[in-house]
Length: 116
Image (cartoon, rainbow, N blue to C red; front, side, top):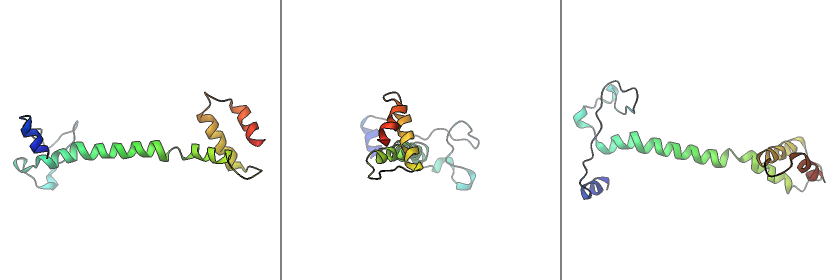
């Protein structure tokens, strides 16, 4: 599909110059691959130098946005908790929530209001 699109706009898909010691750029083909430069597949080259790093970056961003915020979401659970008395882990979760929203709320009053 990429080759067809390149033909439409008169573009040649080429592999960048590859040397044995590339230190400032991706080096997908090493001596262990037993590949000659003339045998390198353009699709494989762009897959290993562009696509796979992009997918890896995308996955890291998803983890950062959703999984790393578990502590904050646990703070919301303490607000709606049915327990009359909060244990130390619930109080710590709520403090993390209050720290996250500290520009918008008063941290000192919020813990007192939770205990009420």
